[in-house]
Amino acid sequence: MATGTDAMIFSALSTHLRGMPDVLPIAGPNITFPPTGQTKPAKFLKLDFLPNRTRQITLGPDPQQKVGMMQVSVMWPVGNGLTDALDVAGQIIDRFKNQTLFASGVKITINSEPWAARPIQDVDRMNIPVTIPYIAFEPEI
Image (cartoon, rainbow, N blue to C red; front, side, top):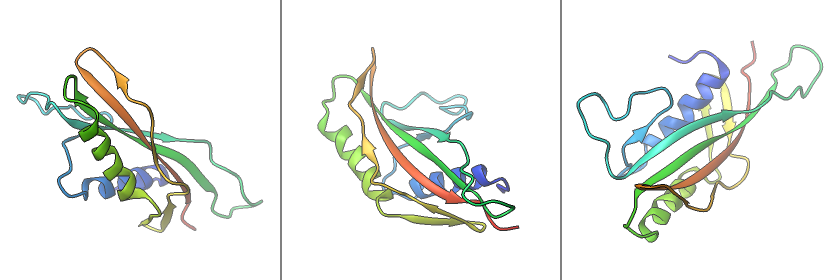
């Protein structure tokens, strides 16, 4: 179980993503993907967690503001067009838009609408990064 604030935030955001209907396989940070003995799927999601500097909102020991982003990259095989991959990116945006999540006393607010960046073309795969910005407050002690 996550106990640090950043760990709780990441856990809540990734759990919310995994709750999408028909979610593609997810490659999480520092997790072997695909699992040993399996082949990499043609279509999958890749997670990156990008916490930023904690903001000192008040003087003293009050809970401080955590800000950052989770990036979900829609990984799509080359030669399969753009429309379906953009639909998946749109589903991720809709999943997180206007959401407030809670995790062990941490309130996590998606503070602006998530957005998809331009597709990034690689040799065998296209990547559409979807950025999900958040604001959270450390739990009170």
